[in-house]
Amino acid sequence: MSQQSMKIEAARAALEYVENGMRLGIGSGSTAEEFVKLLAERVNAGLEIIGVPTSERTAKLCTELGVPLSSLDETPQLDLTIDGADELDANLSLIKGGGGALLREKIVAFASKKMIVIADGSKVVEKLGAFPLPIEVNIFGLAATKQAVEDAAGKLNLTGAIKIRENRDGDEFKTDGGHLILDASFGHICDPEALSNALHAIPGVVEHGLFIGLADVAVVAQENGVEIKTAAL
Ligand SMILES: O=C(CO)[C@H](O)[C@H](O)COP(=O)(O)O
Image (cartoon, rainbow, N blue to C red; front, side, top):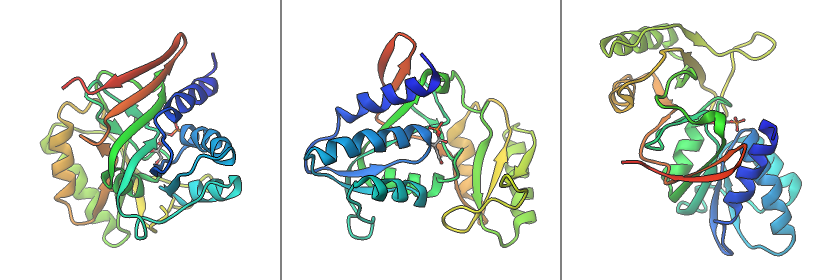
């Protein structure tokens, strides 16, 4: 099965968790987009949900396909968020933000009673960190913030390149909130919670892509079928 087919299978299996009347957080990225397409089919067949998108891109796709949307201001409490991930471990700690939507994704997941991660098997890791950690930062004081991130990580024995994310045309990538992303290639992160706390202590850091204690279930599509994972701890 191709990776794309696995994304579709994970999205299809996650759709089983969606019930009529739900207020639904809708994730970003290619796996989440497969979910949106399948959700739209169900909505057009009569399923009633209201969605809160985690990015402008997801909002556009939902609108094009007829998925009704609300905002987190109008609908501040959600029943379920379904979103992809760049990495997930056995505790269902995640790295997210490969698509740059991590801030809104985390706000939406936090506002939800439950979060389900959808992924193909390649996203499952023993230790987080092979995927560079996205860190969303304010433009003001960028060099100082980057230095502070390096210093904080160094105290946790995490070293490695920290790069300002660029678009394909070489310009700085800007998030939907108008911030920049630092992609930190720290390698294996032994203590994600300690790193999360250290990053949150830096004023220029808006948010980071470590999602700890947010995901309740992971729906992971492997070659031989879909596996439902719950946190090991
Ligand atoms: O966090 C995200 C976007 O900010 C995505 O969920 C993550 O990058 C996974 O994307 P994909 O499903 O395309 O592999």
